Image (tube, rainbow, N blue to C red; front, side):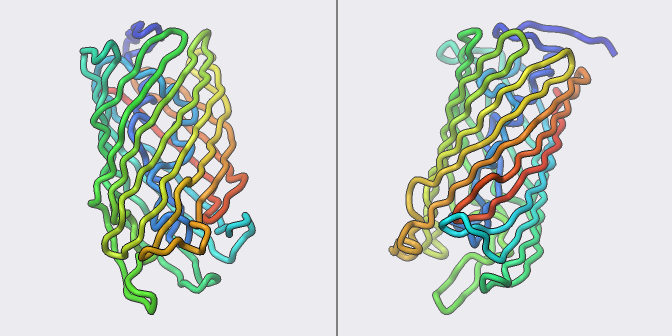
Length: 318
């Protein structure tokens, strides 16, 4: 197999794919915060999903694919960050496609993306008045119709929009308080609109990236529950050495509007979710195929599961 090299947008690429890991973060990916957490169902964006990715710089024109495997494990935290007797173990398989056409929009590289996550979840909520639940199914389909990346070398700026369709596996049940989302539900019974803004510094093998994301959630009309909106900030500091890339990063997540159930603010304080993740990452470029791995430990959480993330992904051009 021969190795073709290209230079695009001031960044060196091998087989037009050594940076195809950008496809992993160009579209929003699913997380899991839990029905007992602040958001009613899974938090749409996976905190830390773009750690290790120069998300500010899109790859060269072409069609890219990726498949990511993520394990999330952790216990439930209350409003003060104290542990509650509930645990979650979640597996996610996240295939995605990214298309970068060979034209510019407003002087920027343009891309569109599609993601269809699959989830297996094992919940133990017996200690907080629930039960044990094992379920699996498809999460909401995620489309990203518009992403723009400007080359201001050595800085790269990207903005875009992700949309979560209300089409995944969802189920509810009737309780004494009315109809609520079942613990067996995999997807969210509401739409999410997700604008993002990324800044990457790429020079001499360095990747310094900040990626800010906002999730705006619509109401679940089945349960009359409005999940609060969230802010996410992924951050990366890493360096490439030949085919290897190594570094560290993390995520800060903060829900900034209240959860409201049937017109009443939940728990009187909006039950706002917060989490901090930190950890290392590494990647290796085989040529047309790139592998990446990261471990992000849950340092702190409030009003949700403090899950740690174990990730292994592969990306490739078509």
